[in-house]
Length: 396
View 1 (cartoon, rainbow, N blue to C red):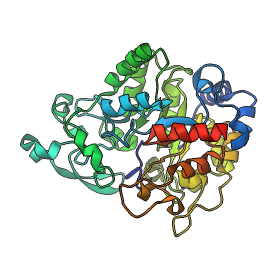
View 2 (cartoon, rainbow, N blue to C red; view 1 turned 90 degrees about the horizontal axis):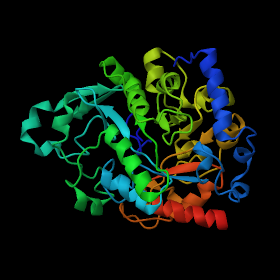
View 3 (cartoon, rainbow, N blue to C red; view 1 turned 120 degrees about the vertical axis):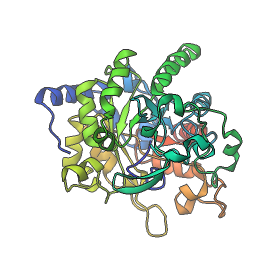
View 4 (tube, one colour; view 1 turned 180 degrees about the vertical axis):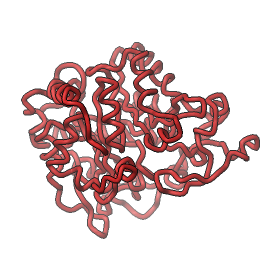
């Protein structure tokens, strides 16, 4: 997952045809349970229902543990090393991956199109001339961009740890893995499903879709083509597609039948497609009951920042939960907020232990607090911690 900007540190024109909207509404009921009773339960009550029966989303444990960019707390993100470890640790879903295009139109998995911080591109003198400054969703950004490289060129690079100050141990694995393509991920998903005897789920994201469409590198059609090619474009397919731009999800809604999720950043922020279209609404407008009803017309879920579920005060401590969980469930939407991490700087202040930037705080306490709101799942860089926290919560 990413943000418009830098996801994790901050972490449209709503026109769909009546047929598409009706189909989506029906699909939402089919996927999430027509009565909505499972979704309407409170956190502790829902803990007695650790999994939903049936196919599709209903078959996933609740709360669902989603490996954020794999097991990125332990390996460089968006690598097969990170994805593989997430499965080994027991993640219910692997976020593989944040999708950005190459110059020759392939989809690859990187947190952002700028790859200076996640690859060893700076160590390749042959690519020194590719370093440039671009305006990415209104932000001047300097570095190397996937759209300026062919796939063959990107395959000569290797992944590195994105936040070494917080994860110095992950730098041990710098240079070990290449950049995966989305098609490689789809094949890996099938291989792992066969090997493990259990369906592997993935949760890709379209990154900066308006930006790339203006470059002639539309993401949604490329995603849909690959999902169709691999038979994974159906309502019960084990692929959930997400985006911070509602119009990208609306576009995908017309191309595939997969479960779809709208990501939501800070309350005061505006999705970049809204900015481009002159839509004045902010995320705060989207999380109103009217906004959520609109989203439910073309998506099955939302991926809000954790701060939209429980805001923090000026000191970084958790305050009173909002009504977002209840309001989203009332219109049939699931909630998979982001992102739980074990290290101190990423935890609410009261859950930190000491001041070291790479030291773990009381992440179990934080997980428990968020689970109690009734969320349906959570993105986490540490899937093993999340699974233990879920076990505590369900059995507590």
